[in-house]
Image 1 (cartoon, helix red, strand yellow):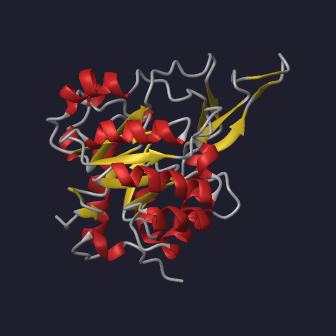
Image 2 (cartoon, one colour):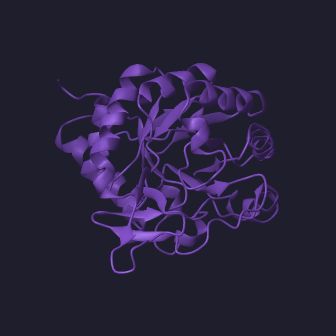
Length: 303
């Protein structure tokens, strides 16, 4: 086998395949379908300081080559996570990462502080890019100064690997990326979902209760690939690519564009074992092209 090991900050991974938050539960839900320890890292569903019910139903809709969701970060809050979820996942022998979100600066800080105390969680993914909540989330992620402010504040209280997740719903993604890098991010993940909507023509009404929601799936891949390529050329910290990765070939394209690792999201709903299949496909690609390490193809796009 080729050497698939990668590092993001102080985070060491068996391979570059990660799961995208909100598409893989807390990991345990998938253990009947896939060996969790063969996944480079599992990013659990979004966690906030306080309990969130999420948005009213309907909050999901199928689109051509993708889906819309407006779940709205439904979760039982960080204290519930620490007491009930963490004991169930802390001994899984892979990197368990918590996606942290908030509605204001203080809620981000307090949530990150609580996660920082958990020895079995080596990293967080800071979500400053969610298009499905009315407060916080994407509001921080669309302005360089605001993005830097929240990252800087969390960096002061969070001492392990800090990954920052960016929204694509901006004019210049590289300006946001450079701002969070300067503020202390150890890695940058992108893209979160694109803002979209669906209409029921017969009822003349929006399909989603929130009117708009986050679009994911194969249809967003060209946009995601372009943004990953741009950001990888603009920053020095590792970039994690996601958005429309449905198979190993998609994953390799993101690596060639400059991503050090990738996240799989919507494809988990189609094939719960897609993560290990993608890792195997990356290895096969490296062997066929006589590369010894996955590092050899990161950013190897020839222009």
